[in-house]
Every structure is written in structure tokens, then in C-alpha cells.
Length: 88
Image (cartoon, rainbow, N blue to C red; front, side, top):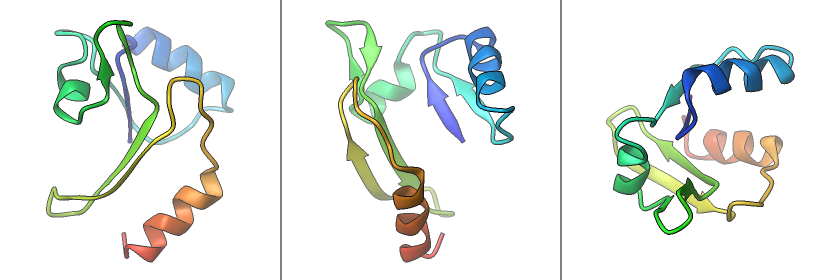
């Protein structure tokens, strides 16, 4: 699943631009950044979140995380390999 501080309307438009992604997108919209803050990814001074990836196990424990900064780019194949490595 994906989470951002954008609204569900932004998520709908964003997912359509990626040929209609099928995984859920959650809005950390109000109160803005509450979930992101709990993961240490909300950048309050800028009012945005860091681009972070957090892999959470079936038991709810954080297995791995990576922060790439607001302008960073992820490599989907690398994330998939990490999830497979962790057995998720």
C-alpha cells in the first residue's frame, strides 16, 4: 500500500497516471502528517513528507526502511528484491 499526505482526489489522479495502479493508497491528510510523523517521515517545516519506504511485516513490525529525500527516486525492482529477501 502507499501512504501520502495528499487527498484521495490527488491519489486517484496520480494512480491514473501510472496506468491505474491496483494497490491501496491511504491519505495521511487530516490531521495532516499524523501517521508520517509516527514513522519520522513528516517534514513539518516544509509541510511535506520525506520519500520513505517502510516494509512492515505481517506482525506489524518494521522490517526495513529507507529514506531518499523529497526529490529522490525509487527503483521498484530493488524494493521487490528487498521484500523477497525479507520473506514478505
